[in-house]
Length: 334
Image 1 (tube, one colour):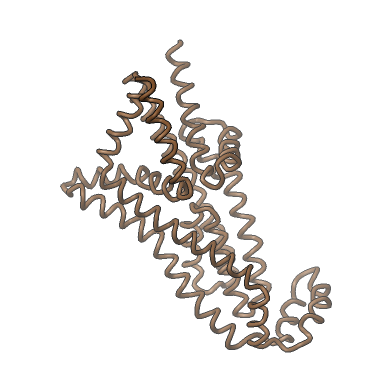
Image 2 (cartoon, rainbow, N blue to C red):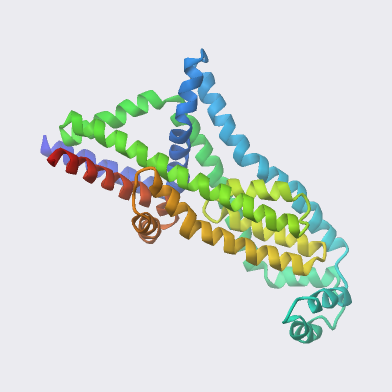
């Protein structure tokens, strides 16, 4: 029996290794499904069939993630095309740079040489050609982000449709491994609580990012700033998602020749998202399970160090689950 268990574990680890390149969207999809599962179950209790309730659940996540992406494309692409067709003049760029407080005159003096030749569409095309590798790398990252979002939605849909079967399968696996039914039920309950706590931290950080970045974009008069605000909030749960949105929004401002506003949006917005990552998310992640702030923060940072970007989710889930098991064991000893 022991050898059979060992063989099954080895095969399971090999299967996990094969799927590891897609660990980020798979785990994200599972967490999305678990976070919305109470609402799906509520729909089923109101008379919806499990299939329809799962479809509504998946549709919610699809709209939540896909709508801002579509809005960004609709806003950003025309701005980029307009920049290529009507590039700003050197004098207009220098005039805007000179208006930057404190360092404006210094930047103007250094930029004057670089902008001595007229800025034309041919010059912009040459810049793009000379930096093709960098631009391709950014395009690749955007493609990876979109692909991972698609995979996460497919996983969330599969888990939502088969949540009862999958839940029973996970319970059987843990029971088979531990041989203790009471421990199995406790572990599942604690792990589900940990996942919901992590999702709460992610959503709280998203709300923090969306509100403050939205205020900055509104003051900077970013075109369609509510769209960008929603996109920052939603995609902040995706690694590098909010950063990509902020960079594109800044590029749109640059395309409109609003250089100071673009730099302000780029710098201040990233300061806000970093504050959310290091202060708001850890605080909210540990709040529901009464986990100390430092442990929650270190679980996120340590998770990234050990597992990469997927550690943003799996790191705190593991630590919060371990903390929950420890707390339960302490209660049993008293």
